[in-house]
Image (cartoon, rainbow, N blue to C red; front, side, top):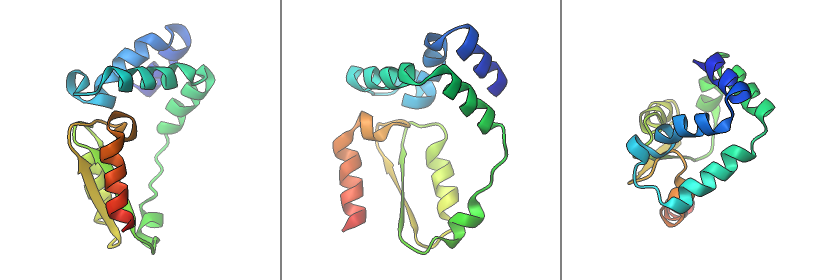
Length: 131
């Protein structure tokens, strides 16, 4: 899958990958992301050099378990996840179990790019954490 995505980035261009990742980023059928949020994500995606996309896919193949480092973090940790992100909410909860200082906030109606999709909700979550 990752090698296929790297090949797509090089030989098919970024548009195909952008469309493929849309559901993963914003939730099923694009979730409730605004047109502005989608435009910002598309600009970021298209602005990423192709060689960096290929390097990212190759790096993702490597099994790097950083849980032992996270377990030793001795300061409060806030994990923010989007409700519509098909990976992050469950993963964040699982990771948080490894550290008593960690807490998870799931933001309603957003996918993977919560700071772009709903900046006020994301900022409120950070404000609550910092206070």
